[in-house]
Image (tube, rainbow, N blue to C red; front, side, top):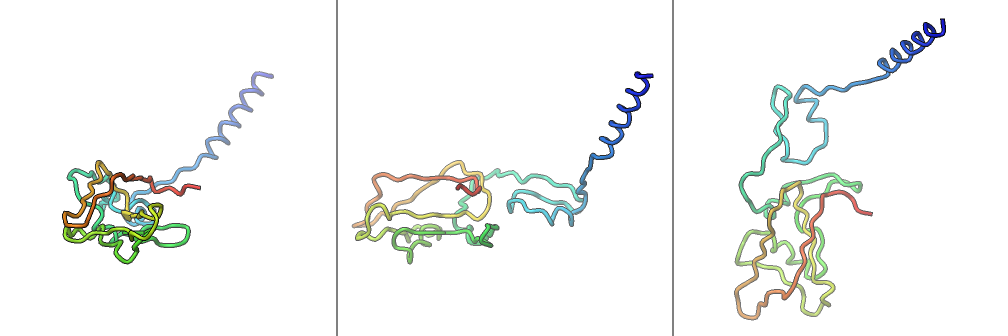
Length: 156
């Protein structure tokens, strides 16, 4: 009798557990388009199937950064030069893809202000960062510099 009661209780428990499981299916293009994911990373087909986009060819992601936006807690953030510690008026020249223009910090500002923050506006697989320094009289390349990357997640 105890064995029968134990089996019935186990069956009742398993039935309740199976009923409690939920699933969520996404099988149309319209359903996928309601989700947030990094722009340019997925190819959503008309039949609802998705395929990750491969980054095959190297490209310069900086000039097109202002064409992309992404959501932050404070609202939409457009890519491009986000902040400049010095000479903010010329900061966009650093990503304009014109070898004849450049950004340089104001020489009167302290070295601690010689920095820029650039947001590429979307997820990009970065293999290298190439810096071009102007080849003109009076322009000197920085002796040292640092490049930082981010996975796009908020750091507290």
